[in-house]
Image (cartoon, rainbow, N blue to C red; front, side, top):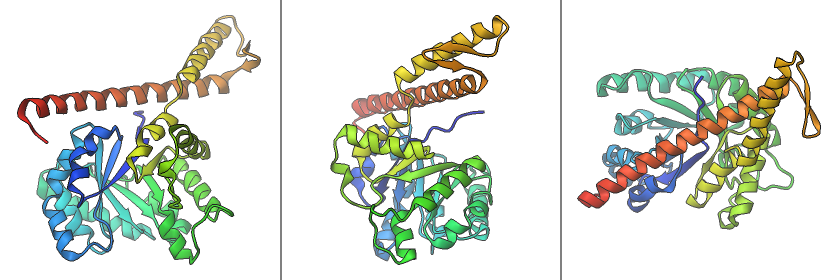
Length: 315
C-alpha cells in the first residue's frame, strides 16, 4: 500500500498574489489556497477568476494543492478551482454524511465537465462544530474521496461558546476522538499548528519541531500550517530521524538472524526483539522511504521550476 505523505499543509490566502507566486518554493507537501469566509463578494469573484492559474502556480514545486471552499458556495468555488493540478477541496463545517455526499456529487459533475478523471479530486473535511465532532465517523466514511481530516479548533471554540486557550485544554477529547476514528477508518488525522493563535510562529526551529513532535505522538500524521515558518519543522518532526532509521535497520537484521537460527526473539541494545518490534521496524523504515521519495519528488519539481524561471523569466 502506498503511504500518504502530507506532513505539512500550508495555508495561503488565495487573494495574496505574492504569496501564491512563491509558495511553491517553501517545501510544503501540500498547499491550501483559502477562499476564506467573510471575503467581500468582489474579492471572491476576483479570486475565483485567477484560481486555476494559482493552483498550477503553487503546484509547480511538487506540492499537492487543495482549495478551501466556502460552505455557502461549494459549487462555484470548486468549479473555479477544478483542473488537472487540483488535488482536492477543503470542505468547512460538515456535520453529517449528507454534507459530504453533496460535495462528492458536486465533484463528480465538475470532473465530468472538466475532463478530469472521476474520483480524482479529494474531499478534506474541516470539522468545526460540536455536531461535526460527534459524527466524525459517519463524516469521514461517507466518501472514498476522503484521505485526511482536521478539526478547526478556532471554529470549534466558537461552536462551543468558549474562549480559546491551552490551560485547561478544551480539545483533548476532540483531538483524541479525531485520531482514533480517523486512524480506524484509514484516514489521516491532521493537527493545527498554533491552534490558539498565540504567535507560536515566532518560536525557534527546535521549539517548533518539539510542538509538531508532540502532535505526532498524539497520533496526528501531519499539520495544517498557517505560517511558512512551520513547514520545515513539521516536515522534520513527521519524518523518522536518521538515528531511528539506523536503529530499526539493525533491529530487522538482528531479528532476521534470530529467525534463521530458529527463534522468534533475540536480545539487542538492552531489549528483546520479537515479532511486534520487527513489525514496528517495518513501519518506521517504510515511512522513512516514503518521506525520502516525497522529498526527492518535490526537489526534482522545484529544480525544474527554477530552470524554467531562469530560462524564460517566468514568475
